[in-house]
Image (cartoon, rainbow, N blue to C red; front, side):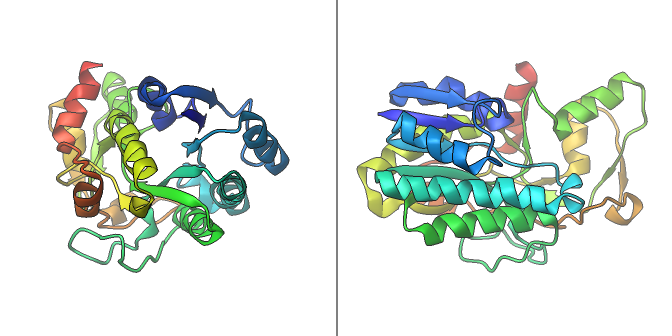
Length: 277
């Protein structure tokens, strides 16, 4: 199996470099080789590689910055994936794409399932939902994996920000009214090859899935688990940001468990593994 991985330098892409090769030949490209804003380059790369599976781990993920750069976010998160879907359809191959819990508004108070209505409340969420829709309406074979609160030992993420603030001796004040499931990039990367194998073997399994760590917590409680010390809990109103965040974005993973036989461990285990790294 020949796999084209797009976004090899990101958090999830970097982790996938270690897990996808067990499926076959891996051709991995970063932004310098394939920029999703350059649609002709996207088409040309896919046609030259001729993969059996395309894994798109590239995305515009700067949630607050997207409020002022919505056209750029849409070009990367919608238009790029739309071209990938078109090329996947032409080649008759499968596209694996990552989306986000931020396609929901957070008004629900029980874990979101795949069939729940979407209603993103920020530009990033709108751009990611548009990317999902472009893929689903393209007619290509696809697997869309919604995840959330992703972190790793590299890149820009909440885990590294909290550790840096502690090293700088800063007092930590973190919102305690936003609920989600912190999910390490390595947890995702371990699960993706199995998902690919299952769907390649049985195309009736393709579709949209939620893929997050088990359990849930708040940003404040996540921060306390990272640093092992007291963190002051505050409300979202006390920490205004350019982009609104859903107050509740926990995802239900039962479809992933039942149809693909994939069950991610609890978020605490993923955090401990990442801290060991």
